[in-house]
Image 1 (tube, one colour):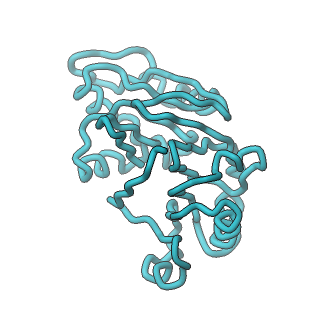
Image 2: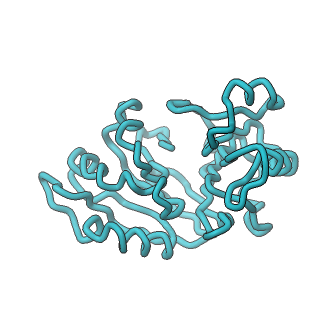
Image 3: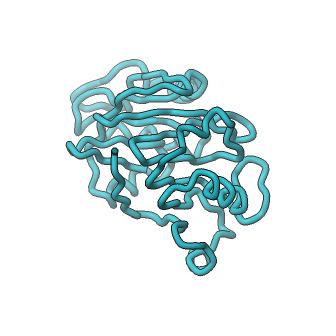
Length: 222
């Protein structure tokens, strides 16, 4: 996901394997920061392509994540955390910014609040910015994280399939969360192959819809 603030600065959430193609499609050559929700491959294997972003901005890119996530990324991509190599940047250059669940901070000029999510095999980072929240790779929301999801305009939430799954939320779970939290708009993401787009458009109630590549959302910060 790519978030652009009112001043034009951009915050990227995760760097999946197709990040390069997605950024090209969005005509987004410049980034100002990145947040990693966790270190699973489908959320970090685009790190090498961030070197082109380094070339555009001429410096290391601020990278936010929990201590556990950043340590795992450092183990796999140690060369990305040992300092920039301007002007060519033959490898990616990331500046670690470690955060803890419950922290509030500014990234790319945006007011960020992060909260804990249970992904079954690990915890992941949920993200709230103003009245927008992003919750990917979650199977259970801890009670202490619920206040961070209250009063939302738009909630992008992972929903892998219709039936139960060990590490991802299913459609019934998401519907229960929506009934409790009452966001104005809910957008389903991180969907598996069984989540047919046309069928979801037909079956989902008003206010809940499936995401698609290139989807653009306008959300209020206050």
